[in-house]
Image (cartoon, rainbow, N blue to C red; front, side, top):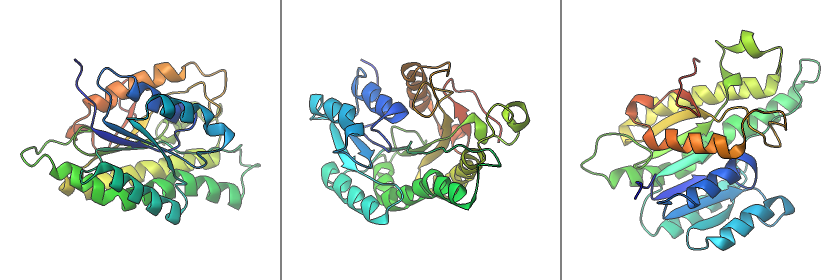
Length: 259
């Protein structure tokens, strides 16, 4: 039997696209996590119907959690619910997937566009980590004789993008200008690097992952990767990560992307 990727995981933005496929493939894996917390902004809304149907099918594993990653109140209530469900155990893995994009040429971009995208793509993941940090520490401490970091023990995965790479910007900027998205995801990478340094004392692995250009509502129909292909690769990378990967940006095939 395949090894379980972790005992417990929280996925944000899980009602559609990459987040929904993450939950689906995790629960359908040969050894699924014991508990999957599927966070989304509006669990009872029409855009969450597919997630609710999946959760109904796997009621013993999936808990749908109301979670607006830009709301302190929502995050606090979600962390209390997760803590209660874990019954004294820690949370092994957070996948900060919730993110937004808006049309982003220079002409289209103003203060509000930059602030809104930055708030969701950077501030949101930071707030999630702050509130769930005690549960991540508790998970890491449950492996008292293990010094190696891994997603099975305690980890944070921030979903980033190739478009965040400053080094690679000249080769792809003309195809996808997207100022708010690019700038916010570059900032998310710095958040990843800071957290990796800050939380290594706690035994928590932190890294960014690029899922590829995927056929989602955000990625569009012309994207070369299906969500199934992307997430299959991401899960393999997540399962194989060690402390050498902490503070890095990898793609869905495990290849390093320069900052």
